[in-house]
Image (cartoon, rainbow, N blue to C red; front, side, top):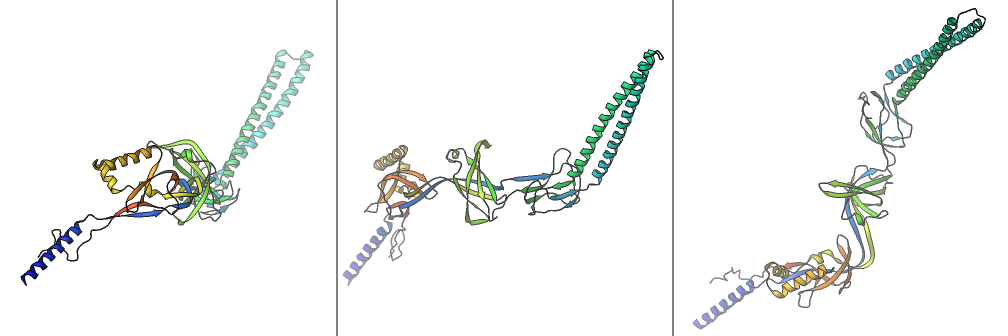
Length: 407
């Protein structure tokens, strides 16, 4: 009986030791793989910008006064020449009447001056005849000549006053016309900055009363592109973009302009790229923020690998590189670096022994998920490693701790 107990105890101890060492065995690594695909790939430059109407006109006033009437509001469609607001015209009407009176008075004075010229001219002619006959003295002839010359000068002065008062009248009439504010273009009112009863002053610069978008069916996006990417942008390229108002809808446009003037903000140089957009559905509105991707290159039916595969490195290689141990693995890391410096990269596939094996590759254009495979021993449906997952330690059924089960 004792022998049986001893044998049983030995078996239990052996089982416990086996379970303990099995639990302490290093976790086996597993890898997440993704298949190599074949299909189109699009390289793009990302940027943000703001939507705006192609032609936006700011309507102001050239005269000061109190706003008496408003004929349009936000989103009102307007036609060129349509009255959209009226400044109180009373003061301008009074100025027109005053200027007209001054003008008429100047014309009357001119007529009087012309009559005086005619009269002095006749007197001068008679005095010349009398002088020839010896009836009057030379001084009388000289006085008549002086009177005539003064009359002629009076006509010129009166003519100048007529011109001056005529200009003042035209200015007063122009100011009266300016009191009626009209739309300069066909379009839609996108902004109204005044209310009835408000006083507007045009002393130094014209105040903006309305903003009119000429045509909201055609819009543009002003984007800021970094100097490192601007060489990839060309006029005519397609640009896709989204707006926060329609997160599930993708819109498209065309690059219409690349401005040469740099924009420097905190030592960061960017350039403005203008993208033309058709907005026939009128879903897009001025001021919306657009997240833009300009398609700089597109290739169809190419072999492409996930970008995550290029970033993957086995944990063992990272440890060897960090600690400077395991010379063979260090050489592999240096070789990988050399390959990268020479213009190539590498990805990893699984061997039959479930071990990562490097495959040198040369890549081309890339999008946000894939990169073109130019050369490398890979084909469609091959699986490349994108991540390493360490499996959890297996534990024994007896629930032993780190030191094994207790008896």
